[in-house]
Length: 239
Length: 349
Image (cartoon, rainbow over all chains, first blue to last red; front, side, top):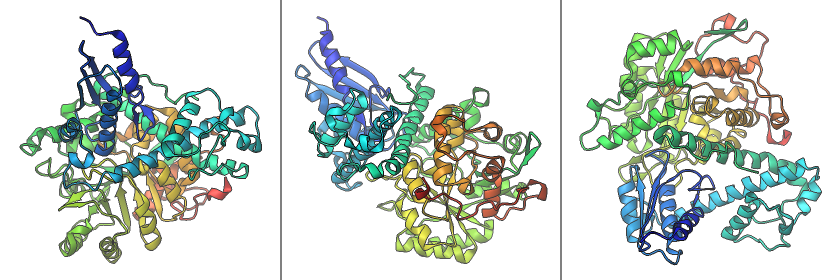
């Protein structure tokens, strides 16, 4: 009996929804999924491999835990094994993920409560939103819109791009307004981006975006060097 | 000294290592970590040009002969500063300790100096050790790893009251350069070890000290820039920026340098090769040749001049470390390297 191709596709599709929290890119396009085996019975074994064995354990844990969580939501999937490979805290993290424990469970007595990790994740969701909004804004300005026109845009006016789609996903995750008639661009506190602030905001937003992109670039370069894998390498995320 | 197109550059490399990561120095039982660490550094070397890559075997342990050739003879470096890294839980004699680095300083005292370290959690004993080290190595700088795990503590902050005692001791001992390493660390686990906020406060509270943030706070370069633009005594160490991006990711290099020139300014940036992760030669030569393209994409950024490069390559660091610069290598058109007020204000955007 062979594995239904649709199940493998569903599994890979689910993993594509797992984002590196620091980079706001799917672990699949970053090349972090090094193996994905689906058995005829629906047992799934996924291996994750990060650019270096010293990559921050907190973010490594979040990606492994998220992978397990999204696979649980695929109906035909039965047993799930997620393994973090080649990482200096891999043993602890893999055991905790297998038990369904939180991060504090992986390192008993060595970390604060898991709430800290929730706050850290949220901080990066906000950075990601800033970065992606700035790309959309700059594209509008290049098309000749002025600051007032950009600030007047609503969610329903957003272009049909990955950035726009991800912005709305981030707004949902952050509990920020995302209805079609809500403002297209928000400040980190959820208030609409005022036209008068646009230029100044873009100056800082561009820096945030550059940071995310450069870190992604360094991660890809290291993964290529260490494992010789050819990775989808856009140099810069698509606009 | 490096000369190109009739311009002469005084080169100070503010981040050097003289490490021993060879298998003989691996702590029994910790081999996989010791091996993993040096292999990771070796992967970073791979981001430089192919003809500068070493075999892993060569990379394990630096030699005096290799150092002299790569740094002084071929690397154009006039003066170098060692930043020490201990990692004694993985390497029996340490990875790159002040003691080990000092063996090179003893041999080349006119061209090298070593920075010390402190950890405020070591209390009185730590203060005493700092005094001894300051005397022994004639310290003008220290490197601090705020995220290190120690006796059940998950790292420390430069704003801790104990840390202030050590900063006061630094002033008393004539140590004026505090290099903060906020990069990848072994421990702790939970919080964001890269957070640079404490440097902001410490820099304000201690205006007589200079705070050099290694590898420009990567991967938190944006937080570093927002902070550095407000603090006249915060500097950017360019390790990893030149070595990791200039060759491997030239467009990102342009953008990072453009942002740094805008937010931090040319008086606040220090060349750092991170040798032996990368050899200085290609970094020095490539940086002097580098230009920010004259395209729309970069129109908003300050464009580097010859003086910009002279400052970044060596004159800024020479000022912070009181290194004598021959007259012909100083800025010929006036101007003061490492000037504290040169960073552009955000409002000028």
